[in-house]
Image (cartoon, rainbow, N blue to C red):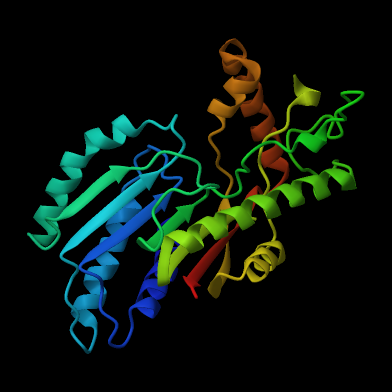
Length: 290
């Protein structure tokens, strides 16, 4: 998914730094929802490649930034130590491939929720987020009746075809609130003309996942109503289904049930995939701060 959206990211950065606009001496980059897997530093590599390409290929030869400050963001429970252990090999590969041009590349962690402030005002130049914003800040409290404790979304763990209309409304309102907060926080942190690139996916009765995959129109509406960013580009592409949900399931049900749960889940997934073509539509969104 990340590699598929690289072209959009390149177009966004090129658009922001086209003509005679120079890169800052220190280019500050943030990857929001970075996780801690093997793909964590791919986005950083891609952005460095893009900046280098813009500087070498532009008609008005641009100077590379003298330094790059990269912030990797995720919730405090993320395994940042694993990322730190991989940094030495990342720096070695960077020097081998590009020489000393990127020797002043400094990578740090910035733990916290991206639904709140993470950085000082007007400090960030490029912000990227992949497959993170469909995770809401919380499970909507309105899904359970306060008086009777009745669950309105019985038999489901998120919005589905069998969910009643009020559940769709509750999830949409939570998404609108969260995404608006996200945009407002980033609008304060990103410099004028800065770039933000987003990639997003279009006990049991009492368990609901804080997950909502908004439609293209729902995303457009929030961006337009919040008003801090120009919508530079919004593309839709399809990817096969894949998810890693163990941590959130452990939190709800406990560790003892997880092995058996995933055995049953695997059987259900195989059964369903033989009958249906499992695919997700993904949104690739390029925003430029006004």
